[in-house]
Image (cartoon, rainbow, N blue to C red; front, side, top):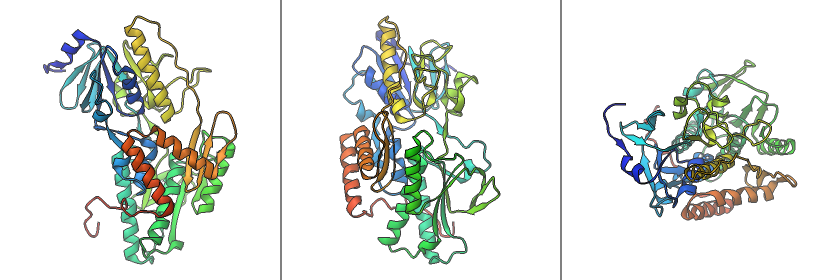
Length: 432
């Protein structure tokens, strides 16, 4: 790795060094457990902020500002003397020498390494999907998608609704992200017509949600899936189940059935993968989705003092040999468990196996409509489900300021949609 001196040698002589790669839900929980303990923790991320991923779709559809769902990592751990944030991208790990190489050439040493690097959009090798669709996994993705949605509306407004092609938005993927985004895009269209007085013929606008599965919200109960389908269709979303995408071009989506759907924007919410992330350095023997194989205590198989949590790991369910879904609750619980096991190792104690506690799943379809599926008890839908969804997301949102801002925005939007976030931030040349 060159002759660049490694950083952290002096700290390791004083106390163990824990290096956490990633500042998402899982990474933050690892660090929270270790904050104030007799270790030194370095958290590395290419962004200097934590992003609350479940609300990215609201940034993309002009419901929230980017700052509402992001919070500086340095501020989160500002009171923890044993925690250091390092802005950078880990590009390689030397497991034999316990070194991590960053993109700027710096090296960080570690006694324990935690992969909490998350995942990226999975395009499943579909031609054109990686270049002509808009994923929704980072704050930059959300801002870019918002620009594209609003720009498409402005172009349609100039044409006065007499375009040869209808104004169509396609969302690929019928999981929670796809369902929530479809409902939010439809609400954005409605509010632009009603409040911004855009000259768009509503009869030529369409939101299409595609999924190859026979039902929406695959991890939910049949009742939740049926409610989501009925709610979306009643609001005007064209939901097409059992449809697979064959190819995506600049201005259309071609289905395997042969149908060609002209579209202005294609939103990709069809799944994630850990392939082409830093966990590639672990080797080719990986679980489905490119995730790292881990033992019951979340240590990486075949590597000493290396752990993996959240979306980057095939987190064991704790029974039956099953792995957990790539959801925020799994990331939070696995990160917390990993931090505790690192302390157990440092204290000479036995590690414990991870046990996932299913606290339920939720998804919102739009105003006054959501599903909340708890492990025990009835399925909550409609207004009560919507209130439960908002309450849970406010609780887990990082930062008191962000909670207040989001609550105010949601309250204001409920009575009268504000105009602030509907801004095209990218400079666009006429004719592009």
